[in-house]
Image (cartoon, rainbow, N blue to C red; front, top):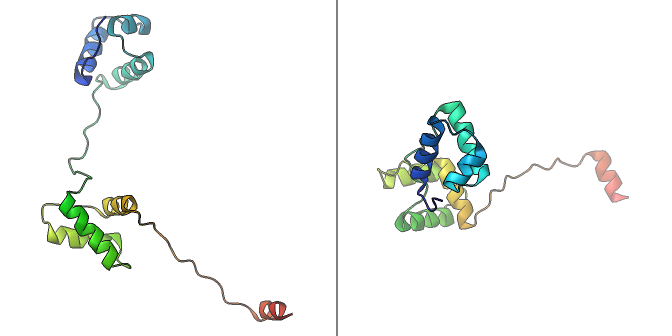
Length: 135
């Protein structure tokens, strides 16, 4: 019957129906036209936490502005051996209100096409291995 509700309206609608005694998934689906799999998730949240609303998230934005993005690109291209902590420190000094974490720097560098490579040590050849290689 009811279609195209906003997410918060769907949450409150299902919560009101749940508190008014409508506990059958098929009835909820007929009334709200919400997918049954979504209704199962909503009901599980209602039974466990008494609310459908998600947990609060961090307010720190993960996206950089275009100016900061280009600055990160320049830092990554000029300082090839810099760690993500060093780059985060430089960006936080340049932009005091940014407060960016090194993990976010790594994610953005990955999006820029930079890949992490950790050098592995190769053991030196032993005398026996050198003799086998010569023969």
